Length: 171
Image 1: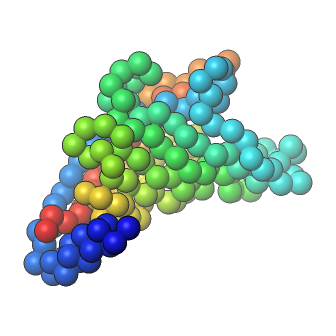
Image 2: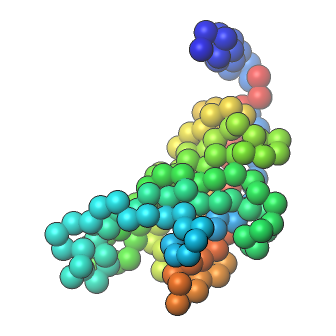
């Protein structure tokens, strides 16, 4: 822990002279609600969820696979971990708090945190804010554009495309 704290302290001291970097990342989120390799689990619901046309109050924990292309067996990039809950009484919209954890490649060990409203059925270009990150993405900010690549009505499994526009620092 002391080595890690010292490294972050040194990084922070150099931040005033750091170069701001723009990075764009693109990958796919394997949204698996059913089957053997399920990655989303219901953890709570409100008293009105079962009668709500928008599933208000339904909350899921997420640990979705991130891949380089839409196929679930393509190159692994990392995991998307966090919560997704139906948070709108009038329209279908999710409140999402996700950490994108990079487990492979040049960003391995780094994370990007996203927190915001996702109107999941409104169009195919939805914007969520980047609120932070760790590792290479310390103090990250920016936006994520997300769209549904595919959705299976029978299983409710889907593939969601993510494009990240990130501002972060190099010291």
